[in-house]
Length: 61
Image (cartoon, rainbow, N blue to C red; front, top):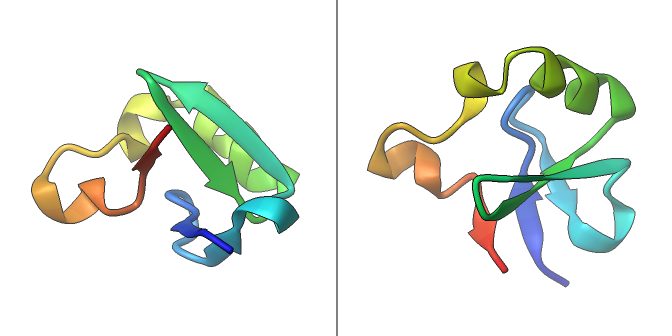
């Protein structure tokens, strides 16, 4: 089962068990909790991958 990292809190999240997900700039982002998704929604640019090391937080679909 694919695992992703919640960009807000850094927690590992399995796709099937994600509390929320967002499509942003062609990427699907998975969140451990609705609160993390809402935090992302308020300021997505703060959490978007800006370097190669942070890009591993996102998986392209």
